[in-house]
Image (cartoon, rainbow, N blue to C red; front, side):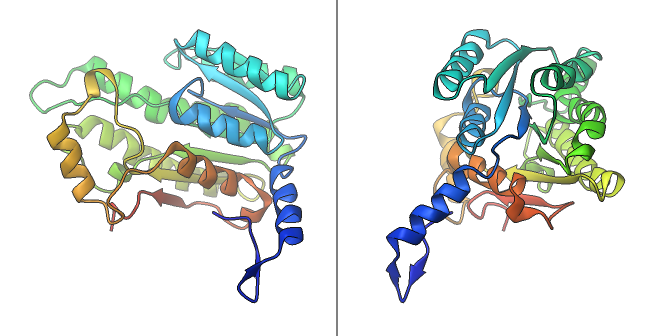
Length: 271
């Protein structure tokens, strides 16, 4: 998304500067929780919202050093503008603790970004109960209970919830039936919460396509990567910045009449 207006086909430098300034300060004095935000897409989202003026609560599971480094960099840029909170989202007490940490620090909550997500294959014939519990916890149960814990605070400020869904909530991905089902549940949760929490809280989702290749056990080979790229209309991966910009828009006042929608950011993969 561009902030540069055009007049008669030519950029207006003065207007562009004014627009950029308004864009950067649109979240000033607001507080945001972002789960799984120590690294990868979550960290880029945190940087984007912090640059827009928000005070950010960085949730992490095991990435302590990355989380603390990110928080330190934010606080160097703007004093007392970031904190980190560690929590295992499988812990039933975690949602309340994460939200209470943010409230105790900032005194308010304006946005909850449910970004944390487990992803790995579960071919039929090898699926375990533990895998189902794990994938549904990070991709559905934690967002549900975080939203429930955050709702009273968000309602006070006409706040926003953004859920990180996936294009595979719409179209299944081979060998990943449990993950796809969990994301489909999150898609419906997004729509249901938009009804349940209206009119005081807006609830939307982002459905990323191919942004970053998965790591670890979910890693895929070059042939699979090539096949994925062949199915993308724009013939390339997206970037974490693409996701961060979409979230920044949905959190901002510019989207104050949008709720109950899941926005694909996928380069046309879902066409």
